[in-house]
Each structure stands twice: as structure tokens, then as C-alpha cells.
Length: 324
Length: 263
Image (cartoon, rainbow over all chains, first blue to last red; front, top):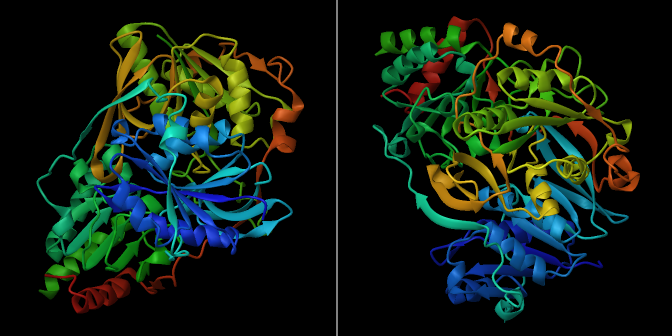
């Protein structure tokens, strides 16, 4: 193929993120013969770069003390200066990728394909990809014209990580990237504020009763608290409950909230967006109760119950209490 | 501070179950209830709160057909001072870049200190704000869940990052921010509020008013296009319990006991 594939590597505290291997898999789905170049930006990143030579043929390093925190406004400027137009850049679709990528596609004059979950070959300069809309309620096939290059974000967890070609080498691109000075000075990073600790640490719970938008009203939360109590578990929730300020932020399960690993997970009125599911690890026994039979959660759950949770939950709580 | 908020009319997922139509060419649109994109509504509320604190104006703009006027009016009833509708058959089929190009042309006609979009809309792309900033050569931040406007040269912002953390930065004005839900509590808009703005004129601008060339907008310029819709298959699928509520409850209690779900 006439293009090269670059992969932006996330890393933290000297460790490469899991998405690095996923991007190898994603790149191979675009072009099975692809020679993939990893791009690593940061400060004191030699060990990160060296470890990547085991799965990338070439590793581009941009290493500077001023890059210790990944400010996408800065990194966009650096990448726009060194990635030749007409090529493909893969970036994980997380809070950083979402910040960096749409604008980078403009700077590189390429197409932008956000949040791809699968690829289905290239035909006549067009890449066929799978995306989702409406928080995962429907999927779509899209065609992306990559003939003039593209920035593509890939959903974390959607591609099974693969190892790439071993025996790669590190190329120091710092001087090239900084040739025009340090970009992005109009947005200055100040600090990261850690999540507040709440009254319950849901990351330690074996049993979680989790509620979503389907709860409808704040006053309905009580019936789910009673279920959690009957089961001996804790109450957690998805994002809309936090946005409505009905529960503390510390009870939110998802990529922007907590990552939990219970044995049993009850999803009540939760549709099952990937951001929510991304916060559930360790394959718990999952029960979904939702009145929408098309809710994506039913594809993930072990047991599905298509009912109005407001009717179902009180009966369930009573039966559990009786059975003890 | 003069603030522009870009909004979109979308099917309301709180009111509808979204499903694919029989041919897979579209979602089932019969009986869909439309409203303003949830993220955009938070952005408008934030703009109104900033204006009420430091002065200035809030303008809402939408790209869409004449029905988008309803969502513009709704946001004006919330407190936006002005609405603008960008509408033209030539805009149809635009991808994210096409939409950003249309909005950029409108923005160039005014002078705004702050431009807000929702962090994403119905298609989950989250792209227009970042593209717009790049086209305008303005600084950008996504997933913003805090704005402290105290200065007319720069503001303090917070971004929602992983694991409940918040990233704090300082950003120079003018800038483009995409707003995350939960940043505020959008006010309720009643029928009376909407009636009050029912007769306010909303200017409509098309491609020629904006000086837009046909080759930068619409389906012909789009590099990304949707081929079809289908129902996702994520896992093997849940075992769906059947029967009356009592029968389902009995079965579920049994299952929960065997899986350690009742302590």
C-alpha cells in the first residue's frame, strides 16, 4: 500500500499502555503487510521506547523535559510537524485521543475516522470500518477515504492485542519535532486533581447493584438501595446518575469513573455504553434488567430480564429477604 | 464575554429506543422524538451562567433543516440571546469537516471570545469542536467539566480524564471548548418560556451567504460516509428469562444464590 501506518503510544510511569498491542492488531486489519511506526512522546522515555522495539519495526521518540505531562495542544503541534501528509495515524480513543485527533486531522489535511471498533479492508482508497452510534444501540459501516491520509481513533478494548515484528529500532525525532519551537503555549497544564474518596469503595465490592438512566427519578433509588442491602452488596451507578447529582461521583462505574471487579454485577436500567462497560473487569456474573429489549447491555450480560425495574426490583428484594 | 454555542437537533435517546430499519439504510425514524443534543444543552447552560456572571452575550447556532429552529428556540428560552440557523440543501451529507467548515464561515462573520460545543452528539464522533479550533487556529480543550471565567484574556478549565480525575489547565481566549455532561445542572424550560421567544426572528443563512464553495461541504466533499446501519453483536448474548415477574424472580434468586450474589 502507498501509505505508512503510525501508532501513537500511550504510556504512564514508564509503562506502555495495553492499547499499544491493540493498535498493532488494528493496523494489520487495515494492511496485513503494514510496517508500523510507533510514536512515543514524553520525558525520560528511553525504557518505554526500547520495550516497544519488541513489537514495532520503528519507534519514533520525542523526548523533552517539557513533555512530562501529555498536553494534547502541544503534542498536536509536534506531530503535525513530523508526520508526512498522506499517511495513517492510529490513536486510542480515550480522553487524550479525543482531545488530540480531530484537530490533528485538520492540520495533516487528512480524513478523520473517530472511535473505530473494527476494520473490513481497503477498497479503491477507501477503508471500510465499523463504528457505533447512540451509545452503542446501533452499529454502522462507514467508508473513509484514506487516499489523502487519515487520523483514526480506535476504541480501547475493541481489538485483541497482537505482537508486531520484533527487532525494531528507536529513531530520535526530538530535534525535528522541536525545530519550530515548543508549540501549544495557549493551553497550559496546571495540575491533576485526584478523585474524591467516597463513603464506599466500590472497587472492593463483590456484589454491585448498579443503576442507570432507567431509574427515572431520584426517589426511585431507594428500592435499589434495598436490593443492594438484601444481597449484601453496594450501590453503584452509570454516568447519568452522577450528572444528575443523585449519587456521589465515587460510585460511578466506567472509564471516567471507577474500575470495578465484582463477582456479581446487577445492571438496572443501564443501556451499556462502552464507557460504562470499560469500567467492569474480571468477567462478573452479570444480570441486566432493562425495559428496552434492544439495550446493548443484553449482549454482554449473562442473564437478561426485559422488565421495568421499578416493578421488578421490589419483588426481587422481597423474595431474597424471604429466602434467607 | 461573547459566547457562541454550536448545537444539534438529535433523536432523544431518553424518549426513544433506537433501532435499525428493515433495510438497514437508516434508524427507524417513525415516531422519534427529537430534542437538543444533551451535551449541547449543558454547553448552553454553562454559557448562560458565564454571561450572567461577567456580562456579554450568548448566541446559539445550529446546522440543519428548518426543524432545527425548534431546538434553537428552546435554548433561547433557556436564556440564549440570539439564534442562527445555517441551512442549505448543499450542506446535506457533510461529514465532521464539512460541518466544521460551515460553522467556521459563520464564526468568521462575528467576534466571539468563547466557542462551545457538546463533547459529542448522537453519532458519538466528538469531532466538530476540535476541527473547528484547528481551522480557526484557536486553542482547544475537550471533555470540559469546569470553567472559571475571571479574566478576559484567559480562563481556568477542568477536563474529565480517567478514573474520576480532573485535569486543570489555563487556556487563552478566544478558544474552543467541548463540554462534558455534568458540568452544571441545566435549567428547566417550560412551555411559557418557549412561547416568549416564539416570535423572535432567527436568521437563516445558506452556502452563498457564508461564501462557501460547494467543493468544501456536503456529500461530495465528505471523506467519511455511512454505508449502512446494523444491530451490533457484542457478546454471545444474555439468556433472557421468560415468564411472569414472579417466575423470573424465582429463577433469578436461584441463579444469584449459586453465583454468590446473595450474602
